[in-house]
Image 1 (tube, one colour):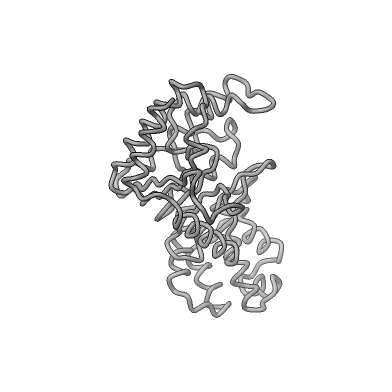
Image 2 (cartoon, one colour):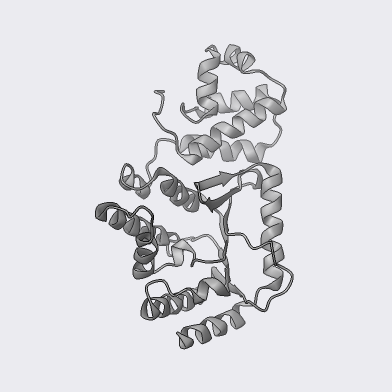
Length: 284
């Protein structure tokens, strides 16, 4: 299998899980290379996601590493067998930053999505005008063709909410994000009305964290938590001034699950949140 010039976050994750498995077994890359009849450099490429791995080879590695987690192994096999398939997001490669394509890929394969948003409406909930306004604030300004590509990509991401067997999506949105007037009152009002419509879908939960809520000061932190087919394959995506990061170390996953649960305790329930959003919309 030829080397990839770049690896997606999902391909890197498959390799990372194989590396974790090898390290947990106390096995060196050289030992693994001997098993596979190759050299340590190729093992490194596999573990970096730059080189694919077949189901037969993956199961050989798992047995060699004495991994008894059959659910994890089976999930990794599914990932390995899907390496040659291209998702809709690939049409944007070379125009939209690869990290944004990785977010779309993560959402596509998630079994559940949970997000916390403090200053912005969740990406897949955004209307076209709201999205264009947000990307229009980029510094330095985006070229017109890249701006339009990012808008189109973000709108296409929302398809995860409407497809057959859509994953459950839970959103905790701070009141600050609801009151931000991106694009002006008309755009902001239309955005809130769109959220209210989405909140009626049975698999979507929208809950508001009001300014009056106690117990979360200092813990507010935007993030997207994507559940995998098994818990070790969960992923957290966070935005920072330096770009998008994907986290999947077990302690990090535990901490972000706790963060979500902490904020969920002070958020309004779904019905009160819907009324709250309506009130904010009426005041715009």
